[in-house]
Image 1: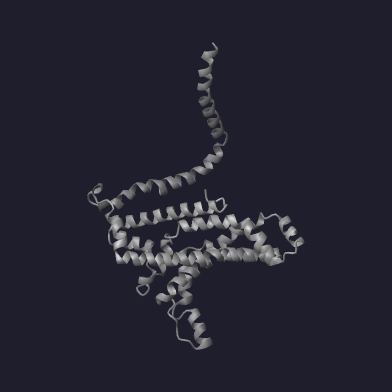
Image 2 (image 1 turned 90 degrees about the vertical axis):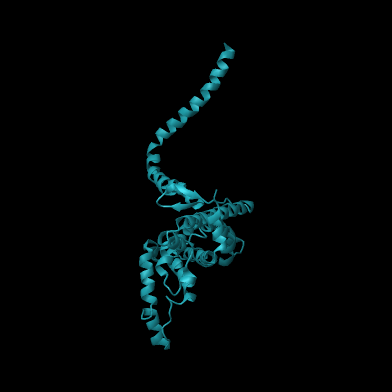
Length: 318
């Protein structure tokens, strides 16, 4: 009898584990219902479309359909590195991405550190609201504002002409201004969002650390360097890793709205190039290959950056 009960007890363990899982799911059913819309969004718009990536390995024929199109393997990916136009577009993308990482990304950190030093709470909340407000504007509105201000007869050129006697500067058509202009738009629109995240991290810093630093004779700059920055270092690393994952994904709308025939060679990036090739010229397979290439590069950068962060003692993204 004793021997017979041993396998029965072993078989009961999976059943009891499943029962506990079911009971926990039922107990937290309302939480899972709240998660359901987000899960459905990612399933429908993120994961299910991945099945269409097979187009990148075929010579897609819209009349024959997806499965009737001829298989070409890696031919479209080879074109990415053989086509001079793709190389130029890729170089434009990397240049703008580096400007956003090393110029726009630190602005949120600096702004959060500055606001953290403000002691007047009313003024602090006012400035915080003002820098956060542009985040809610669409890129259409942002592009319209910059166009109105920077066009030939706009406010900026009018002020420069009346104050200094300068001729109108072609901010919108001169290719030299395109990349700085795109970076300036990113700073103006999105720095407030990053500031909110860093201020939330700064709110969790233990005040006793500052008190100990004052006792040790640390001034405000030393407190900033030895207490404040180390406290938010993990948040900076996580956001930096996420930004690296989007290094080739600059966003279609902003770039497309600021493009014109004069700055096309400098401003055309992978996102707009995929639109021109896939939608306007009908080269769907090659456009899909370029988009898949962007995703693979982003994935590799996230994995490598996360591994490096963990090696240096940070928590990383996962």
